[in-house]
Length: 395
Ligand code: AMP
Image 1: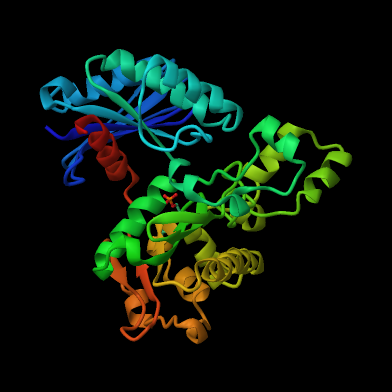
Image 2: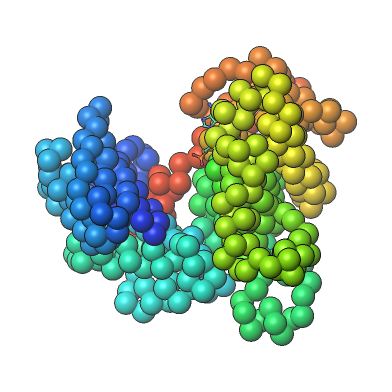
């Protein structure tokens, strides 16, 4: 039995999938939302059936009860289906969690303590871990960390040039995120080009609502654009990406407080801040119809991608693959074309027809004679969490 229940929790939501760790096949998936509100909601999919209900979900434990109930109503309880592990996605593993880890009471407490570095994520993970361990006491629970893949980034790339004592006291360094996605996408890209990952220099652009770039040398992350928090780096749906930190001082002196800055940079920046929407499809439609703000947002977004492409081509000493993934990366031919425009001098030649063709599969969008293979590879973080959890428990 290789089924793993994968849990991806937020402060007011729990996403879940029942996945075959061997094949990545998805048996069922769902989302419990608005946990803690007067009325919550669950959507549960199994096969072609969608079961949607509104109900009170006061806390994460109630969210798990709703999930168990949804499985039963879809025809088989989780115990009847059988699971060999529960895999929990954990955003921040700090410097101490460098690999998938079996969750004990002590590990759960450390995940909670790392909430100081990820206040939006780790406390929510902790709540879900407690509820899940109560709901499934007889199977191993495994934490899979988004930061772990970036533990190979050398000190020169992960150190901020601030007072070293202050950095040490507060755990300040570049941790990087989206590691589960960068790992699975780089492996799938290697399989697509038919070469061992250990031989390849790869640049992965994970362009979703959150976005990050990663330079991967022989399967190891050597640099990544997100930093201490998932705010640094590329322009995102609602997050600013790179800014001059002096901008924050300027606003603090102008009367902003920490909560206002947090809201500005995490929720009212990026595409949302520039053009009023974080949905890339809206942005493209608006830019097409001549909206100057939408066009500027697109240009700023692409400019940031190109800045990191250039940096990582130098960091790696060239590249074998450039890989686009996640909502925008997998779907927007416009972004991919603009990001790779004029790079023939360094061996990138995009085939416009291949780039424009829509597909759900891994594919090449560069010409056959392009020195660097430019690929689109769908990400599948849940399948990777299941694989890593299963590998640890079957060990
Ligand atoms: P993710 O966080 O990976 O789910 O990606 C979400 C982003 O992908 C949003 O900005 C969506 O607007 C964008 N997206 C999804 N589908 C498309 C599409 N067909 N064309 C352009 N952007 C898309």
